[in-house]
Image 1 (cartoon, rainbow, N blue to C red):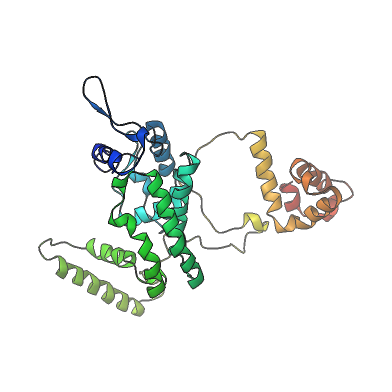
Image 2 (cartoon, helix red, strand yellow):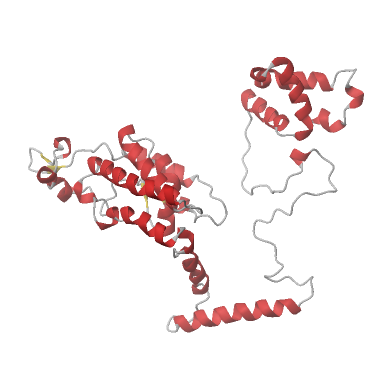
Length: 329
């Protein structure tokens, strides 16, 4: 992203290039007025590309509790990601890096995607010894690929650390039982209850004790009394309503989004939506099987909707169908 003050691809790193490697295209050039010019590297983005990445990050919707709101970290005007916590960087490195950097040349993007996949495999819930042995060998190759792309000034102790992380996983097991994120989240909840900045530790203890006392007392309340023990979750969808008589696809748990926009669907979008409803409705599956047996899978998208509508409203078959089948046709 070439953020000023944070990038390791600075003028000093470029001045060291002639001494360590042969990359004449990246060497610092001197202009006519004796100013030092840093040529654009193939691994860096233009301002337009940076803004597209920030727009993409701002539009992301993460599962509840999986990560913080990364959209707040994206500055579209300046094309930077700022204020990211350690867990934000972890999520970006593991899940988003390969997608966000797909605009780079293929020979540069592939090692980036490989290092992202390495961290994703390393942080999985289940680890196999044979896979870790292979990862220990593969991370050396990935690091060597990155050394051929990025300047020597980029590589310090932190870039060398992934080589040792596999050995640590072999000794300690899956990282979910060893990393600091659950404790940071728990301490963060206690910090929000601090009232006296001169007695931080004492305030955190009192907050914890108050929560324990209130939770213990809640067992003596009547069932109709709302408390943390019986209060529904923030995104509780309540489940199916048995009183509502409808097809299974329309009787699913969930609730609408607060933010909504109105626009007219194109004919292709409308057809795709209708077909999605029919293909994901178990009650329609027998008709789909019969259609495929007669006309083949290739005709599902262009012809199944019309065929189903004609079949349901056919005078010979109309009496055998419930009103629900006619409503979705």
